[in-house]
Amino acid sequence: MSIQTETLSFDPDALALKYRQERDKRVRVDGNDQYQEVVGEFAYFVEDPYIQDALQREPMLDEVEVVIIGGGFGGLLAAARLREAGIHDFRIIEKGGDFGGTWYWNRYPGASCDIESYVYFPLLEKTQFVPKQKYTNAPETLEYCREIAAHYALYENAMLQTEVRATDWDEDLGRWIVSTNRQDAIKARFVVHSNGPLNRPKLPAIKGINEFKGHTFHTSRWDYHYTGGNALGNLENLADKRVAVIGTGATAVQCVPHLGAAAKALYVFQRTPSSIDVRNNQPTDPTWMASQKPGWQDDRRRNFESIMTGAVVKEDLVSDGWTEAFRLLFGSIRDKAPSKLRLLGWAVTGLADKKRYQLGLKQYLTDKAAAHMDLTRALELADFQKMEKVRARADSVVEDPETAEALKPYYRQFCKRPCFHDEYLPTFNRPNVTLVNTDGRGLDQITETGIVFDGVSYEVDCIIFATGFEVGTDYSRRAGYQITGRDGMTISEKWSKGLSTFHGMHTRGFPNAFFFGPAQSAFTATYTYSLDENSIHLAHILSQAKARGCERIEASAAAEQQWVETIIEKARLTAEFQSQCTPGYYNNEGHVNVNPQNNTYGGGPIEFFALMKKWRSKGDLQGLELG
Ligand code: NDP
Image (spheres, rainbow, N blue to C red):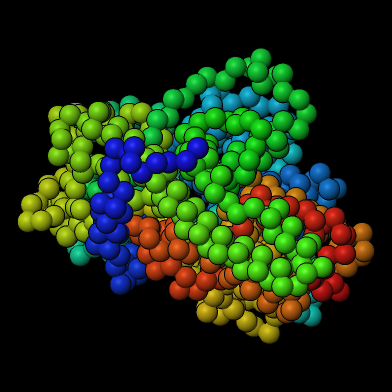
């Protein structure tokens, strides 16, 4: 399918200009520094509101083979895959009161995952769990995390309500010393860092942010004592409250409908609107689930992520808003790719005729450059078309034309996390709900009694920060603990000028430490898929180490250097796209490629997984020094 510009219902050049203007007015010189870290007087924003019985126990000073830091899906999968590989001497340390990670913390009303549950919930074939709906919600996801933990008997290996403070490599012992807030000092041969890429809430560093005298919290620590209700809604305590929510990302999109339904008055402070596509949730058909053949889940998630990387597949198994968007995008360009067969033909004839080969190659490169321009244009047009539909939805749902216009996103769909929701836009038709469109600027000030924007003061009882999580700040700041490796070098020092890893998982100077992605490894929309691949990789390496009787694993300097170069090279593939996007955590707040190695693998997840599988199949752990 190709797009004829003369049949378009919009002016692509005018739209391109509008996108650029919307982007330019949002790029700030302070980038990530525009946010306030949740420390000191802001530390209460990250206290655990969900713990019912505070744990009391003696410090643990023993030794285990493997410590896994983090009890979210990453930690659960790591432990599950280790169990399957016959490695049982491990301990999972988790700061929350239970397993769940992201899903332990994010219990805000409406919290849910818009990646299909049959691909998002890992290990379904092992646990035989049947999600209730195509798109699950937070309570069921938390329940499923507990189900995995029970299935693999992981509670017996868990240290909950325990926060790691430091991990220090002891060269003489050949062990990590893992210290916690409970005075534990556990020796471990191997440490797996699976602390979550979006785990540390961030606040905007707005003037007066510490002056508000009303109630306030971040969405990832929802205060149900204050609001009433639960993750399914019914926030009955808000009936006499004026509430402000700051931010309109994927989290706000899910909680705003519940706030709008419950609060006396709701003010939604928007800097950039999200793209809100159709969700259309459906109950699971248990007979369909039961009829699936062994291996179905791996096929399904691979099929889903393959479509997202533009690969040709026989069938779209998931068939939803995500895959439709990618099918439209990549369907429009298939006929424009330069033929590799032609290049092969030239190469073969070139063996016999050098001049003909050189002419052919020149022609191929010209074709390729033209095709690249064609491809870029076709992709842009397909994206415009898709986003025109998204924008039209705002017009058709939202009654007030000015509010509808303000809710329209003017950027390419995958510049920011696309949202799929059927109740968010109608919320703005409620008489008690006001959209405060800051048009890219953000708020001006917070006062003792409310929020000021553009000279107007909005008096509120409660401010809810739906302002997301730190990405791109120092690793140890986000993890909440420092990692000190060989010769006293810290991970903050090692990565101060840019990430440096082998396969995203190992970094030289930190023997026996394993890092779970997505940095310098795969980024999948189905994040649990990447974590599962990380876990399979980890279990392979530790099984190999055990089989060879080796006690020490460290990336070689050469292998690490080569991997960093690969990441930099592949980052070029996405840099052009990212640099045109409106700022956000996807593109380092608009400052693309400050450190090109601080990227995920630019060749896409399916290519990365295949590369790792090939590496494993060789069986020689190439690139790792073993001792
Ligand atoms: P995001 O980082 O996506 O959104 C933060 C929001 O806060 C943005 O709208 C941002 O505006 C706004 N903001 C930041 N600073 C200010 C300011 N000074 N004034 C006004 N607004 C401000 O965080 P979320 O918690 O929404 O989502 C994080 C990620 O979690 C998602 O990207 C997604 O990966 C995941 N998630 C997935 C869900 C799902 O499956 N449906 C649901 C929820 C989360 P701006 O855009 O201008 O920066």
